[in-house]
Amino acid sequence: MGNLIAEAGPVKAARSALLLAYSMTHPASSMKDPFAGELVEGGAALRGRGVAEQKGALAAALAAFVAAARATPRSHLVLAVSTAGETGQHKAAESILAALPRAPQAAILAIGTGARVSVANKGRLDLHIEVAGRASHSSTPWLGVDALAGARAVMDRLSALDLGPEEHPLLGRPTLTATSIRSFPEATHTLQNLVRLTYDRRLLPGQDPQRALAAVHKALEGLAPWTVTVRAGALQYPAEIDPDGALMRTVRAGCRRAGLPAPGTFVSHGCVDAGLFVRQGGEAAMWGPGDPAMWHTDEERVPLAALREAAAGYLGFLLEA
Image 1: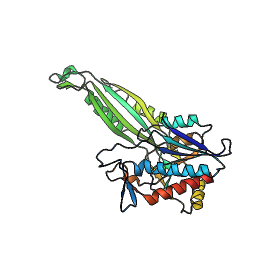
Image 2: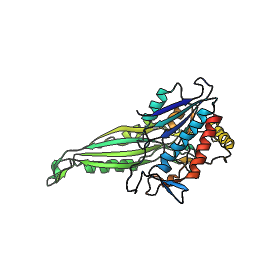
Image 3: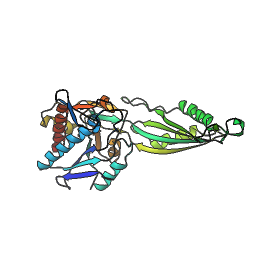
Image 4: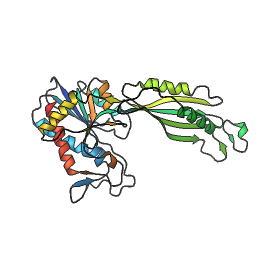
């Protein structure tokens, strides 16, 4: 899939650790000179598309892995650079896992988190819904079945859907949010015969995506005269680790080794690939330089000091793993 995988240290070592970084980034959008790599703030910060989200953490991960490989590490260390990022699915990470001799026990997902470590994140299941009716000329709407009216009925049902009693002490409740709607045919004076909707179902740690899908199926039963179909789209799993578990102890020890303070922790309503690695029996967390509030903005930037500290922290993590 175009991923980069580099390994260092003994493959058969007792422990294996992974740094996973991302090569893909958000489009330029309305940002001026998005890829110039411009130094700003008197040379104290780097400006450009993706530097606060993926590219800054990628640079720090590359530097840390090269230094760790030269230091004769005791553990099996892996640097993977994924072609995913904005794709919202685990396929690239699954390809990386399939190429490794074993799943890593500890994985850091190098992405901008404001230098905090994520101890839990929601997952996400995309739901694609089609509402089919029957087209007619708009002058005689009684001859057709209006798919737009059917879409309104679908949205009403899903707005009222009970997502269950589960509530996470830090992440709160799951959500179900409409993110896209399109109708067809794209023709004038025509009662629409098809509507496609996409919903974003956020998942709490421990929640089964198949149960979430089944609940939507059940909620949309009995909507004649429309035909409603629901299918699952991209899935990213939720994740949760022990704030005092092995991965966090390794991160803190690595920061001490580098002369850095222990990083703070947080929880995320967004997700990348941590949940996939947790499902494989390891621990995984997002951690990296760059303020998420800068993501996708027209003046996205990251302080150079944050990049240096991230590289030192990643190196400490790899050598302590």
